[in-house]
Amino acid sequence: MKAHARHIIIAAVALAIALLVAAVAARSADFSSYSGRQLYARFCANCHGQDGLGNGIVASSLKVLVPDLTRIARRQGGTFKEEAVRRIIDGRTTIPAHGLRAMPVWGIEFSAENLGKANPKATTDDMIARLTEYLRSIQRYTISAESHPTSRGRKPCTPR
Ligand code: HEC
Image 1 (tube, rainbow, N blue to C red):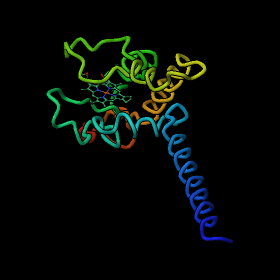
Image 2: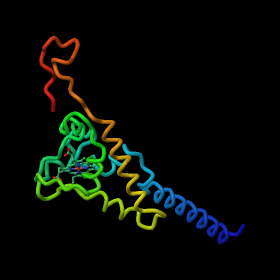
Image 3: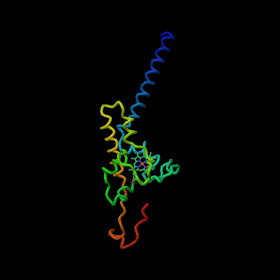
């Protein structure tokens, strides 16, 4: 084989590999197929923290307190109100206590991500439902000293 032909083949193989790498990268950036946990790690952990405790890497530079997301149910009176949480995430519910919302409106952010998909609205709703389900799975409930069978009135651990 002539050197020239060999160079063309090498260039073609290199191009094929580059296209493959790009395709894999593009696929992994399709957040619509992420699980709730993966979506959380990608979009929420920076503020709310890896474990949802409100201590993400940018939390301290925000002017407002970033809430502990493992305590949503506790703040809502002991039950996890799924629809209410979904509405906070997608932006249908504003958080009036803070006046101005510090958190991005995920209904809009994800819709932008899903532009060009077959059904962007349903895809966005799905992602938010998965996130809500993930948040449900990380809730911590405190058992009060009185109701705990072995506590005999001792104080429970200080809730965070
Ligand atoms: C830029 C930082 C930031 C990011 C990123 C962020 N949040 Fe928030 N989040 C906040 C802040 C701050 C609040 C408190 C309300 C406010 O000021 O907007 C909040 C409030 C919430 C609440 C309400 C909690 C409660 O009990 O009142 C939920 C639920 C929530 N975030 C979920 C999420 C989810 C899910 C994601 C990822 C898709 C996310 N957040 C990403 C900053 C952030």
